[in-house]
Image (cartoon, rainbow, N blue to C red; front, side, top):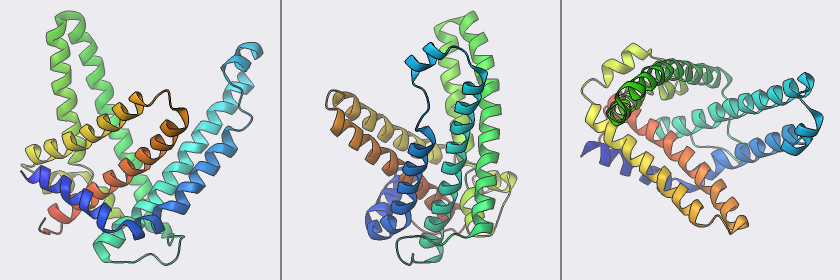
Length: 249
């Protein structure tokens, strides 16, 4: 199956390029952790919030900090993803432990990422609205139908992701062109998405089984989160190489 081969190729990409992966993702990842820690420091916990009451200023401050964290994560994600895509597809090797910041490509990548988030939010929002109505009227049949719709949407979103590596290479394409390039790829993308989702479930199961071992669970959660994020970025790189550049796998 092509989808399975694409998944294995993405995993192999991460394994083969472990030193370069560390050079690209380690320092930016530590920066994300530092930013999150700094911006969350001093934020009241649930007990403190109950004691303070619904103070609008406190609520606004918390929202602004959370938004700031997500914006910082988005920018750093664009920075590192651009470097990884360009390393794999253009053989631009990282120099040192801080990857080059290509402002133009990173900005395009960030905007394309926001575009996908907006499209996904709108499509899933409509699907959830319809799904709730179906479940209310049809019970389990409606739930099954909703799962089918969610699967179709997930594969549809995978057909759009070619716009991200394209932005990283400075060769932007639109969502229409991405759809055209992946025409007839439903089964392939379904298998790839299923493999990535299965790996996510496996990591969550491992963390659940280790829930009592707090330290080990926390360390593994960090490792799994970073590993899955890198694997997903590698999957995007593989898809671009396969569907746009027609590379063999």
